[in-house]
Image (cartoon, rainbow, N blue to C red):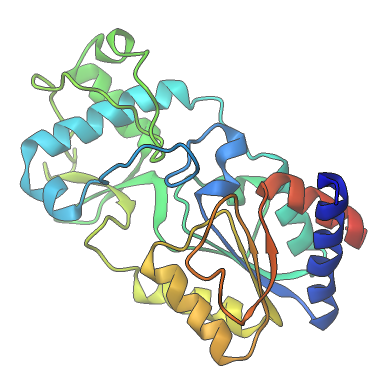
Length: 280
């Protein structure tokens, strides 16, 4: 079977799930690759060890590396916008095809595309909060403070490689001065869930409500290597929901009986074809 014919057959199978009612959608980094954000575990991706919360809070060197990477990464990702997949997903939700979207991504692109019922499992990197008092600031605002404290640093390191977190791989950070909370002088951190932390209870409850309101679950752009995603798959299986998986490369659930549709492909092309098939 030709590639185009194979994809068309798979889209027909995927669209059949919507005859049961709206679907819940769980997305991962693969949904944002077409916006220029690298994937975590896609084909050809080198092994990486994400920073843990213990490293961030307990080691000045890790904090310097984070803020240096965040500042330089902002240069490389300044023009990042929702891609065709994000927009197609927002269209499906608007037309009542989705009970909501649950994402493991912290890039904010689903919301920017117009998705309204959105559970961001790992937070949103655009918000920075202080650790002791919970004061909140925009990432862009805090990065201007970085520039004041580290004049010329961003320009000198502008060619650094962008990582899947949206930061840059900056090596020489010994002299970096990290920003602190202007209200209390406390440590600042992105309002995201680091390795070693748990998804907030209210956020996971929101995700569970999205699954509970659905007749099927679609997993897109995620290998499901993170436990939170697997927990939501379990919720769907407990309710007897059929599951569809859209991902380039293997996932943790490919061999499960609950998976009724498996598409090895990119999220953007699949969701564009799906909206066309459903007349969305």
